[in-house]
Length: 253
Ligand code: ZN
Ligand code: FE
Image (cartoon, rainbow, N blue to C red; front, top):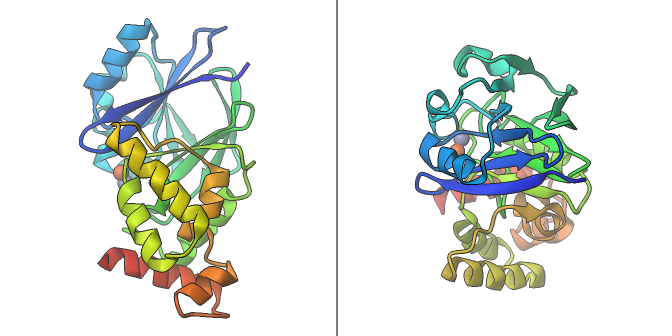
């Protein structure tokens, strides 16, 4: 049976996620922007945390930890252990760990930060990507290079298309507006744009999104798409060059 997923808005525009195994009663949390809304959701459902997964070291993903840690096992990147809260389990790319009774694969998705990891639960079809692959976007390159982030995007886009991409922020409307400047005539982006606007007007989250939808509309997954290269005036350019240009334009947007 797939795990139950709960999306929790935190702070101004962050998301935390709970996954729960209805059979065993185990519950895991991905990222801790703020303890209070997460604890309220746990209390409402009568769940207790077994594991806490951290994607990267930024304050808006870890600062709530002391208020909610309790007896839970805290898991994060070995490469980032020196600047993450104290970890009970340090993991690296290629590791598979058991979370809520389900095999969970670790990917290194550096770019936004060096040492950013993603968690993939194949059976339930969930990928926790935080500030690497985001809905219609990717995280700003604070520490890594465009080539590193492009390599991370290439890993994530190999996941099954029906995978739910559980990303870290509600940035989708801004990402949509930017994507339209690159590719204004792309029918898939125009259609998704209408869905995003309707969702936001009704206060509905645009996260998580399916990988299939991202593959069709997220410019950062399409740096090797000849149509996108042509649309931005770089026909035939190397994908890293296209990715670099797109990310640079977004930083100025
Ligand atoms: Zn971040
Ligand atoms: Fe963040």
